[in-house]
Image (tube, rainbow, N blue to C red; front, side, top):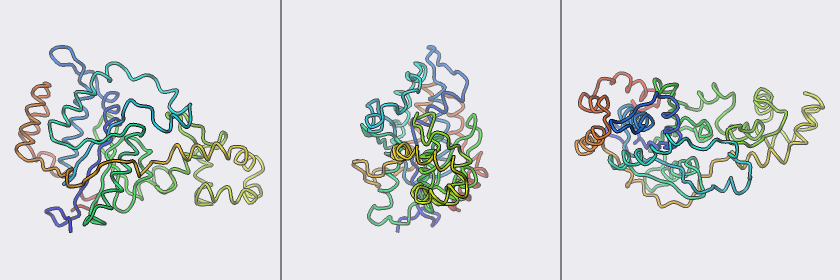
Length: 322
């Protein structure tokens, strides 16, 4: 049985690299090196990385990144993410430095051309439970600001989401997902099938808003259940809503496919190669890297560990790890 030293299930943390990088870039004020290079996203990402290590004490750790190659979603639906602005040069110039921070700490990195980091994370989470000798003995914690990943939340999978300005982090279990989103994790995909996603630029069913979508899913359970009961919806809710649903059926189908995270990306994965211990060697490398970047505050945190012990314990209690 794979257990942490505390006797609790081992923790496998999966960091959504691009989501955290973007969140850091837009949440933090400009921070530059002595040479004038912008580093606010690198600092925010590094800060979050240290917080995750402190709060969650993972036995396994990996970071997933997007690739610049178009994904299968963009090939299947030409409008997918078409309205997203080009990545700002200030952010683009920090990606390589973030990769260097991750590699300096010896953290496993995964990415796959044709797929998003979300799909890579979904696959790694699934593979962790399928790994020999690890079934039901691993707690997966996904670190992301992307609520698409809430569809993966379950008894042994949680999402750890940074708040505004990275000051607070919210832990999503099944109950918290339903509280915040109005539906269960397994219904997130169907919710997005109906409401669409403006940031990813797919339509859902035009004319169906979040409140109506949540109501329909609570009543009929799933997208399939809703379309099985169109006649009942016509009688109970009205001809207009039933007509909108009927007219938008094909768009709902397309949107559902775009919203669904793939969990069988062809990846070479060995859980043991993701083993992580923040030992003296790794801490030394982190100090060296942060000094090189001029992150004095982060160096100070590494040299004075334990200041946030109560907060870390609180997070672990929320995850059932204490």
